[in-house]
Amino acid sequence: MINKIILTFILLFSAVQMVRAQCSNTEYGIATSFAANITNTNNILGAPNNQSTVFGANSQLVVRLANPVLVGTQITIRLRRNTNNAGLLIYNSDQEASGYNNLAQYNSTNTALGSTINVTYTANRTIEYLLFLGNSNNGETFSVDAISYCAPDDPNILVDDVSISENSGSAIFNAVHDGSATAGSFSVNYLITAGSATAGVDYTTSSGVYTGTLNFNGTSGDTEQITVLITDDLDFEGPETYTISFTSVSDASVVITDTATGTINDNDIPANTPLTLFSEFNGYFDYALTGGSLRDTSNPTTSIVASSSNTLTTAVPATAQIKKAYLFWTHSGATPDLSITFENQTVAADYANQYVISSLSFYALFADVTTLINGIGVSNLNSTTFDFSDLNVDNSGSYASGNVTLGGWSLMIFYEEPTLPAVSINLYQGFIGYQNTSTPVSFALDGFYAISTVGAKATFLSWEGDPSSGGELLSLTTSLGTNELSGDGDNIGAVDNPFNGTIFDNTVVPNINNTTTFGLDLDTYDISTFIAPAESSVTANV
Image 1 (cartoon, rainbow, N blue to C red):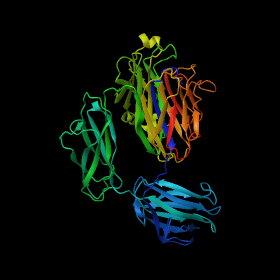
Image 2 (cartoon, rainbow, N blue to C red; image 1 turned 30 degrees about the vertical axis):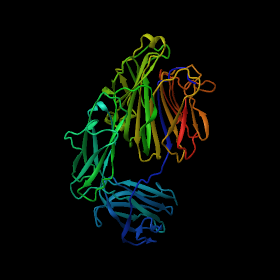
Image 3 (cartoon, rainbow, N blue to C red; image 1 turned 45 degrees about the horizontal axis):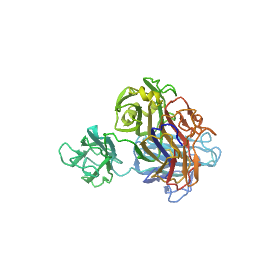
Image 4 (cartoon, rainbow, N blue to C red; image 1 turned 180 degrees about the horizontal axis):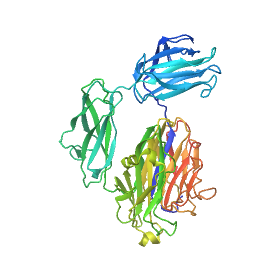
């Protein structure tokens, strides 16, 4: 049940989904020269024979890698210290006879006796040879079981999806040369194909032709751009799409199978938007959140401040890559505020929604701020206090007398980091209000598959909640039954008040439970015990 207005409802659902190999093309080292005191010698140090090369005092082995390892490539060496006083020195070089640099030293201070360990190095120069030297007393031995590394992927062209507002003017697609370099420059032809968007009506190009050619210099990382011009009309339309694909390439070694979808989001404002799947992230992902309110009291709601600041609720790893960052803001008023200030930059809305109740209008707006967040830098995100201001909030008339003045914001950052568990994260977005409902309103959420439930969590963003109210409900229905979500603020025990103006997260230790974000609820719940493996849908009840 709900006895107050709940204006925006956004759910982020995360469940462990898949296992993906870190390396698609593993190669091994081949022994090329030997010296005394090496026993059980393998010709190949790798998976094929599952044996070990044992190093004693003054032993020496040169290993030639099947392909040169380039800068940035990871090399994994499986080691085992067999006896107490054994030691091993490892060197690397780009030539067999000379030029060796010290890579690492292993002995009793950094390896456990009898335990096999995998040590990984990232190459800081081209490496073709590894030199192993036994550094042991007589009778003491060290084993090298295997050497493996990721061979360079085939050269390929990658292009990301682009989603923009109809009034953005143009969509720019970055086509990136990924994988290994080519022998020289090459060209790629592309095609823009209409989907639900119509060529010449919803989008066009500067030449009026929907084919083109990109010229690459052959270096991995080289980026070329495809620009699509977007038409801003006055028609109300849902999201419309078109496709970028590659049709031919001058160098047959380059893979061109990747495609991109362009999405045009209508800027004419829809009303009472139902909750739908908005964005998906599959892979080694997680997300970080923050938000705030321009109200500085719960009730009355008329006291408004000019700005709001907050930090992320959880840390973003320094090694992460920011894939998407979304800024949401909501306010009461007769007209939408399509432009605000965030981090001292003007941010224009990419999308807007309206909700009207008793002749009072409320607006929810959204902007993709990925470029802005990347500009701050991953290493600075955890120490940044994000500033939000210049939102027009109507706190007069019936907004004041009805205690429904609303003004707030939330930032959601989705990032990828290869050491994270593989997951599926779905972002559902809608903008609709409920007040004094006698039965729960249910939202079916699907589009995922939970191989495991470890780390499963759900985040809910809603607006205009008050503490000390009660009579509300937030629960999750799965194959295991229906479970209420609680713990945030005064939503504990017999008090049913999940929409109570809190920022909450019980998936971290210590739990986060900020009870002073008046009118904003940004709550993350641990649902790992509520969901079963192989689950592919849940139902949220409010």
